[in-house]
Image (cartoon, rainbow, N blue to C red):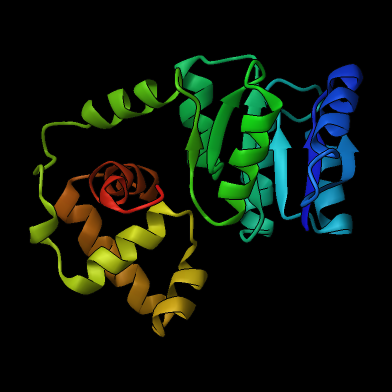
Length: 217
């Protein structure tokens, strides 16, 4: 059973979404938050697997809440579900730690599928969101070296794939039987090789270049 927390300042939307998702046998809504601060508090109390997060909320918005939750509970998956598709919200949410971004117009069946994919560690971007993200990736300054998969070692490829799946350094270290320090060193080399500034841009490159060629992605 995948435990869900819904964070949205519109009660009617939350209740409707909760009712629809509750029809799925493997999904359980364990809590609802009116704002980012409530979401953070409920994450500590309820320990959900996946949080569905709006971006515009009072007191504490979804981007700040995402950043805080990802820092405190990096194993929780955050899916942004909002009406806003502005580039700033999309990129800031992903940089804060969200693993997916969908619009509220997405059918509930597709939202349920996205939740399952997030729970397995895969990112999910809506059809109007993905082009914005890849456009940002393509606009990375010309210092990027435009490397191919062959420019990385097997270990670096393994790390890139796990990074693209939303794994944090601790999870990568555990899965590959490495120390977190070793993972950080590999990531530093990867960032230099890609000519990027952070793990979000590296993950986007890996999703576009590596994961797209894997089955079931």
